Length: 280
Image (cartoon, rainbow, N blue to C red; front, side, top):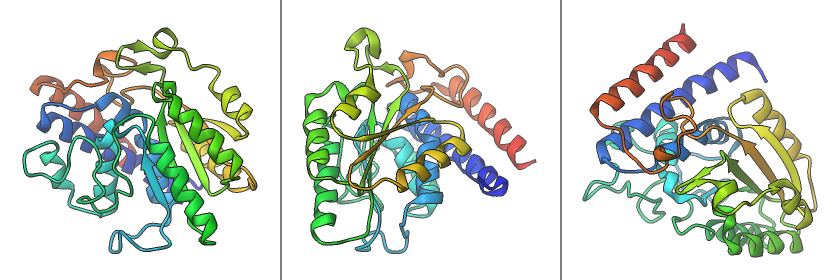
């Protein structure tokens, strides 16, 4: 990947993480851990891969993204704000009464949100429907679906996986955020979904793995995905829950907790230092 593009993506991802912390702190609730682990992925998609236009959020040929793990809405909102779909300052209204930024994405009110999600397991099915529609209508758009590794414990995910392979939905690309933690603890202890790659391969998907926090590797993975035809693609990304905020990293307690003022200040100081180093 071009070094200038990579640096800009790193800077944007850092700002996205700051927006996540800002939103969850002001809401006094939310899900920072899994939002931080997908910040780099969403930054790459919205700033380097997807065909979207903030001035025309509903354009017919846009690429679609379904955040199947809808509780990580703070990440999606922060990326959409950085991309220009709505003001960054609006992130402070997360989960407030009267705000359009609800705890889970709402396609009726938030520009740039393609599917309302939140009930785990269901988003990937909606993404399959979008992809099949595109195939039947000979459209060129791609559909991206972001799932959690704990989410794939839901049986509906595997029905959708079977559906996608059966209908050869090569315009569908799923990304599983494998950070190893869910609300109740380690995924391997709650309901072990491993081996994730082998399961998707057995269902007829082309499987790719990548480092979720290395833009060179992210770019490699998506370039490989672009070369696949005749079957759906899944990228299993190895990520760090809470990535970018030292005291949140790999800590299951930050799955669904908001920082207090002291913790907020610490997180923002760390992220500001990272941003300064990138911009310097």
